Image (cartoon, rainbow, N blue to C red; front, side):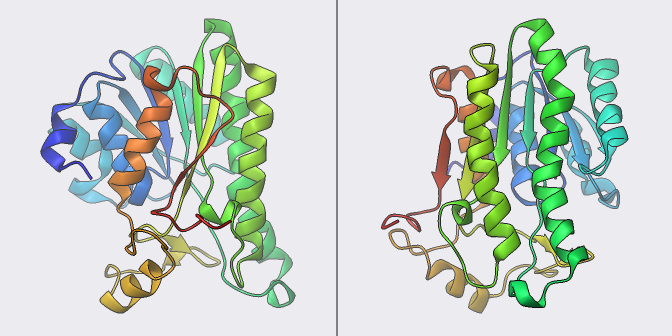
Length: 270
């Protein structure tokens, strides 16, 4: 994994581009928003929460010499997506990249789930992607180019116990990514990342609450790392962010409809 000072230097791989990142104030979204900015992008940072204080991601990006604006918004809300698009256009004049990253999950057998819990996961994970893609595509098509990266999961490829809604929606994102690549190429490239176990303060439950409010314990870290067959450790958000950057920049110009697995070997025998 590259060190923070490597990220801060950047190579200008997104120079002059404007990116929208959802779920931007924690975990993979936070790491990716900062990396995009370090690579020259101007970033619309979207999160459902607005309590990040001085360490909120857009403020960190500004401190690091980048350009960013924060939008509090819910990816399930079409009007909120209109505000996200407007923020990108008003502050930066264009939109080039969408990283559909926000997601949730509920760990409970399906026979114990309520309609509200099931709808919560499906709405955020699938309808959120639908709203985001639908919101940016008119702009991408009118300018003749655009790039979409969705966050799926290793659990979109590999089933997991007591995770029905999460597995179903993440598998849906993988195939929706492929379908969108067919419909909107060659002007728009659409890919997704499939992270394995990543050390983040993920927001889960209904309503959302921190799963690891004080950070992952050593016992939790070892337990999650045990499912990684080759590297035998939990990944870091920055390791996924570099994969997203690769898909979002021109280095991956001949890649579309692809699900890039970033899981340390978790799915090797699938």
